[in-house]
Image (cartoon, rainbow, N blue to C red):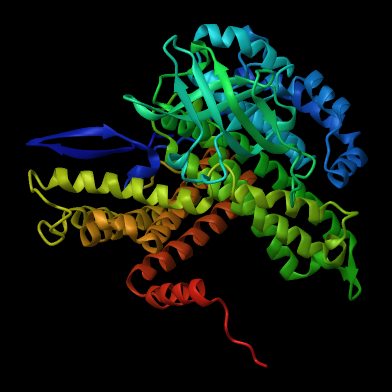
Length: 589
């Protein structure tokens, strides 16, 4: 298969040169993302993964009743945590030289997927340790720090936790109040409180973010051990879902940290936090995929077994529709998560938007799939003795933690707008004040995107001839959507300039469009590989999945872009303001 190029011509004075960029950022300029051919799993992982997955299934299959009890009593007993240690689940992503299993990010995601097929709380305990708890050490630790801590983290002797959120700072990491004051001897005095810390009650290793107000930046990152004087952990929180996992507050009172406790560079804490969260997205995504596969399996079994009106409910079209859409969402999610894992393993410099999309789409797809599985189960699904309601409860948190989906949508849109703005400034060849003059030079990007559309036949086959023939039509659909999307991005950038930062409803529509287009391309790339490997006849179901996902993307993007021109935003915002002031005020009696 021909590799689709992911580049854009950028102007620097009178010179045109090609710059390779983030796959998603390229969408804002009408580019086809370079995710063809779809990445294959690393061969070094295959044998290890097979053994790890077999071990997970053997152990957790025998724990079904215990897992339900853990949820009921909101606790994972010590002997259960010890069993997870013995399985090696705390060292999955730690390099072998430090005693870990040494899987790639894609391989690690597959492990979490398998764990989540059995239990969301267990997946979170393992994932919070590896995805974010000790990921900063892997990414930014020096050799001495790694040698000291990674062997203990690999065996689970030390379990890790990520300490960022505070009572007054959730998604707004810049408002952190925890403070580390540097002393003349280079040590630090740490004071502050962290909330909602997953693994807090069982962790011995904390990655802590604190304000340092240094010349290099306002935030720094530190390694803190539980046994250090002044560290205290609050009682286990009672939660709606993932109840068996351990969550608590963690407080620091005059904790003396040695100079070597600083992780990475002083003042670079915000960058470190964002890199940890982006790099850890494959864990959350893998967990969502595993939970979706379990929900689909349970719903299928119930649909085949439950009889109504003289036949299995699975024979009704409306149930078939639910199962089909659930499956398409799971397949698309797995496709995106696989791409993000490959980007991380390939050491791509910029994959933050792809990671954000994977988090949003995975969490919202799981929420839909879990709800639909419960709906298929009907009254049975609502009963706590069956697993459906626990899947729904456990899945809800994914839309909130590791960056709320609302904040991530704004991040996707504003990052894309910035790249589009930089492009427009470049093609303007020295035009100053572009954002302040939305009329001057209008149409540069629009002409570019219209040219892309005109190059396509009605089904776009010539533009996507590198795809297998049955998929070229869907490539054309996505290509046309990309061009239309980029044209609308230009209009937004030129209309609002820097003021687009305050246009959150517009940003939401743009982010939703970018998400849908990228989801479509990821699914298309994966199906294209399967068609090439298995042949068209053997890939009939996968081709149908591509059709469902891409046509769904087309409908959503069309609706979102239309909403940029005609919407009820003024009324919605006005009503929202009134509710904020006086609440709901309409009683019939």
